Amino acid sequence: MHHKIQRRIFEIIELDHPEDIYSKTFKIFIITLIILNIIALIISTVEDIYQQYQTCLDSFEIISVTIFTIEYILRVWSCNIAFGYKHPIWGRIKFIFKPLVIIDLIAILPFYLPLLLPNLIFTRSFRIFRIFRIFKITRYSNTTKLFAQVIKSKQEEIIIAIFTGIILLVTSASLMYFAENEAQPENFPNIPAAMWWGVVTLTTVGYGDIYPITPLGKFLGAIAALIGIGIFALPTGIIGSGLIEEIQKKQALNQGKESIICPHCGKKID
Image 1 (cartoon, rainbow, N blue to C red):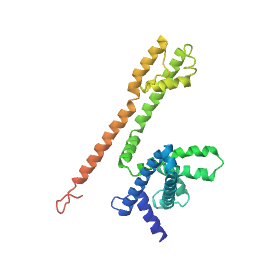
Image 2: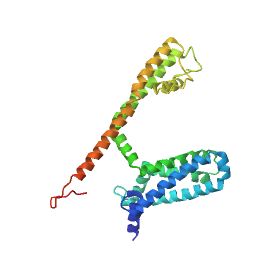
Image 3: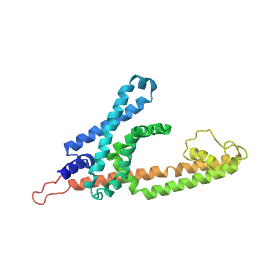
Image 4: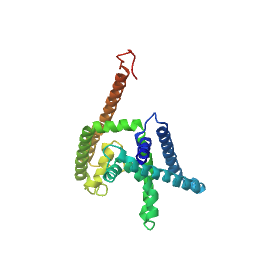
């Protein structure tokens, strides 16, 4: 009996079967609750609105945290059903370190930390982590799952592009430091400070708060800006091509499924 209840809870919460009415209802309920939580968090930053509806907002926060806590506990409790998490202790420890489960924990921690450690002022800053509740939607989003597949399949290319960008950032910031330090010691006091200029320039944001004034600095800045256009566009192109590839694979798989013909009756098999 205990095992059947555990398996059923795991099926509803974790497996997300579209044909399971309970799983589908749970999914819709959690997504709706997450969206309402994000709206409540945004509204609560408006002081006038928060003062007027503080009781309602605080009550909704308590109810939401209670539901998310029960969901988290049930996920950890029922995870032994899944292959790879069979051990009653080590299986659960392994499960709680999954990225999505960590997000579930971060989503509820900001509520409990001030209660557990009321004398520590810094615990109030953890409330900003309430925004992590929006990432709980990634568990139920097919688009997010597709994006994660792209990142996984293109991780080597993305790492190379990021590493190339870091090399360019360090090089350009170092050269700019030596070119501008004497002319602008307050804006380019050291290489780490010059990296802010490098990030703004290479990403073509161009805030204009720090810029070169020497001829050599202007020349290096122009070169860095031109190179940055191409280098920092690489990850976008890699991810874009990966998305197209994954979509084409998905479409080909669906077409393959649709073209399966029953050898007995000659009809297509869904």
